[in-house]
Amino acid sequence: MPFSLRLTFEERAKLADAANGIPLGTYIKAVLFQEDLKKVRRRGTHPVADHRELARVLSALGSSRLSNNVNQLAKAVHTGSLPVNPDTESELRSACADIAAMRSMLIVALGLESEGP
Image: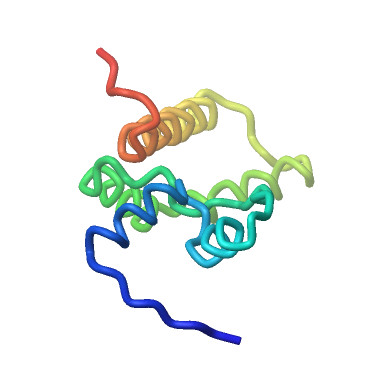
């Protein structure tokens, strides 16, 4: 059965801080009824550090045909029809470099690691 409680902005902030990422309803019930807090899956504990960088990566992914191209390569490998020549090797190396660059941008955008030299 739902229950409503009015809090000031400061009270809500203190409560959220005390809950430390645990859903507030779960935290309040555990404290009120002196229950052990079960391990709860937390969402959004690592906010995006750089929205512009994340937008750049998403834009690059959206404008690329990466998934389609990888699928075509996989199909060619399975059928044995992938030509192995300098052009193919160059294109594969270029695709790998693009993927590595996107990975680096995502790491920076998500604040998981600082941008290196």
